[in-house]
Image 1 (cartoon, rainbow, N blue to C red):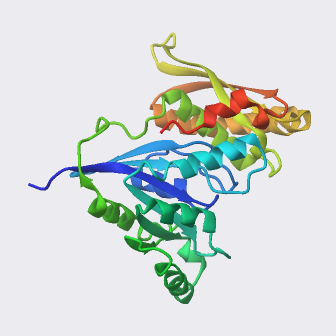
Image 2 (image 1 turned 30 degrees about the vertical axis):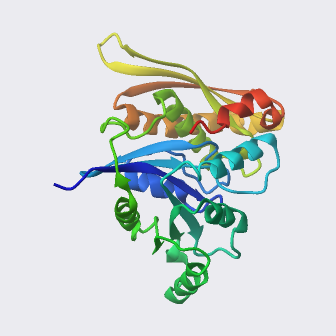
Image 3 (image 1 turned 120 degrees about the vertical axis):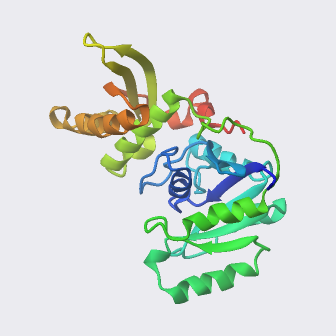
Length: 298
């Protein structure tokens, strides 16, 4: 009988490299928000993949970027600090990247960790370009594997799981096999609502929002139907942003609510009564008390 394996795997790389998309695809559940906006992932999130002979605990980290606030500094620190404490590193780069992310690569080199290099978005380049990237990276570090993938086309993504299992050591299941994340339902709800806002809002607004669920309660309607009451506030940096989030006659907020409710009902497998509010919290991205919420707890 094959021995059971387990371990922690951090997924690191620049913003928008596709880290969260890869994890969501492997897990088969929406664990992390996915948008085409930078800084979508703000804190380390655990996603649990259970296979017949292994349990893989992924750590989805914020994208590496140039810090512009206390929040940015905390996000980068959370991503980098995850590297020394895991069994395997999955380093995700884009096939269209212009230059190597030396800072992240140097942290990996210093850690001497088993590392799988994933080249994402190969659907955007030709085979010659992919071969050039492999040639460029293979001499920079002794990668356990180099895997070109396209999450969009679901090409070679399964190979990441296979390679991780191959490199894991024997170990116990750290989480119940029914679990797929260490996040609470409240945190998952906040991620879903924030994701919809990020996808719908203009570029200058998303970086300055965060969501906070103040109520999440299951009840039965008069007809006996189960329903979740969820109250959530979307915080933003400026009065002008508040107006954009609400939209003319409340149209934007209604749209965010409609799309979020659809995902919430799928996740909770029940009807959802979602109420949204928008409040201004000026310069919260430099407020230590609020920013500490995003610090790594791994």
